[in-house]
Amino acid sequence: MYFTRNSEETALFAASLGQHLLPGDTVLLYGDLGAGKSVFARGCARALGVKDEMASPTFTLMQPYKGKNGVNVYHFDLYRISDEDEFFASGLQDHIGTDGVSLIEWPQQADVCPESRIEIDIVRAEDFDGREIEINIFGMDGREDEILASLRRWERK
Ligand code: ADP
Ligand code: MG
Image (cartoon, rainbow, N blue to C red; front, top):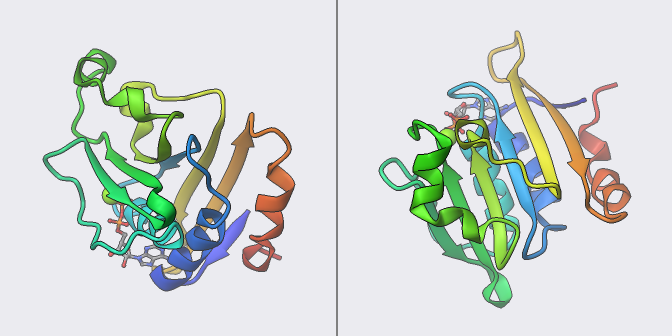
């Protein structure tokens, strides 16, 4: 369990993770509306060298960005999707786990859950700006330790 005291800290936490992400990696972002999923996605993208402002992709399910060394960063927000079929019909799932880093808000809306993934769960703490953040890493071929090591400063004691 990790803890951040404000949105800047959440962005820094996300950037620490973002530094380790490679094309083909997928980050699934769970949490209620306003939990900080978009703040987290921006922090990751910044660390990957995305310079553009990242607006919320309100009417698009996915917004692509370019990071350093031409890395593709795909920001998905599946909040408005009604079912898995609608998402599959969009063809956008082809980007997940392939040619870029995918940062996916509301993955459960379309049952997106690749075998190799980093799950982030953000929960509002009692203190208004605090957030408890849980991270679970699956199928990343021994990269877990390196990633978790870079997040130690945010560990809740
Ligand atoms: P989501 O994408 O999960 O719906 P957003 O990232 O768009 O949520 O919004 C989170 C809001 O909560 C922002 O206004 C942000 O400034 C605020 N906030 C306050 N404290 C935190 C924190 N510790 N981490 C992330 N966001 C925070
Ligand atoms: Mg959001």
